[in-house]
Image 1: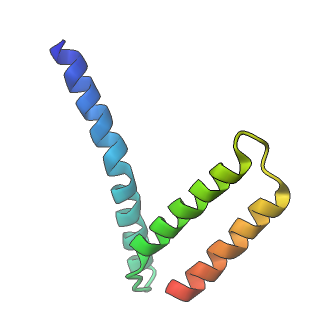
Image 2: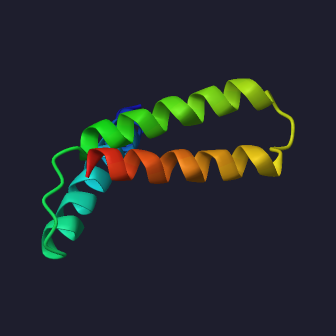
Length: 83
């Protein structure tokens, strides 16, 4: 019983810490490249919102190519706006 609780706790900690670690890694990478990007959290939140909207839109169907192209273009515009 205690091992299952510990395993579940470690799994939850890993799942919860992954977005924070990815944001920190993005910040370190952009800082080393000489770019001060203070909008990393906003970019991650907007990307999460867009991925949720796409998931609601497709609802188990295959993704059309125009949706992927639109998301790439939206990501580029967002990067230019927030950087």
